[in-house]
Image 1 (spheres, helix red, strand yellow):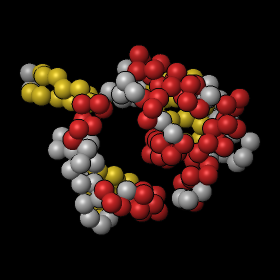
Image 2 (cartoon, one colour):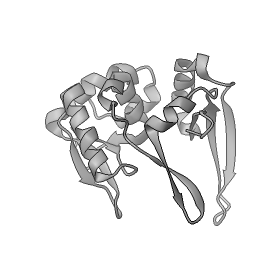
Image 3 (spheres, helix red, strand yellow):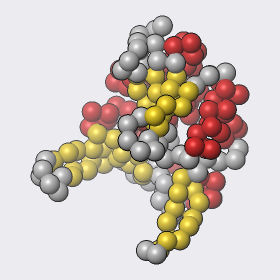
Image 4 (cartoon, rainbow, N blue to C red):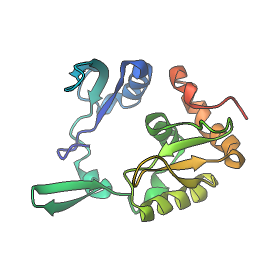
Length: 185
């Protein structure tokens, strides 16, 4: 989210179907059609292509719910935070979109999935874990995921069937994203 209240949605061209679906879900809130972006990697000079859209400047009031401002030697910064009313904001569509944006199926077992959690503090990760339990009855784990301070929310096999039942009806609207789900457990 930008400081002016706009939200940018951008994915690689491989996920264009998802961007189109999300754009349609937010159509009354968007500022225009889906556009394409081209970037050149500064070291390899390899080109990459993505599709993106922006919302209208209507989310400014939500900035204080999802971000906190702080100051450093180089100026003002923002940090993403978990809203205090997270449980009221969670629903199956939110979970499915979060998973399609930042999740995937486990590489170590067929009946498991994960959602990246690297931008949240350990306390916030625990808060999200508890919210998943209260709202969805999903018993998730917090797993280390690579380098320093990188974690994800791991949906283990005992909770995977319920997770699948929650997100798959929404994800069926975006067939190109169902690769992130394991087959029905």
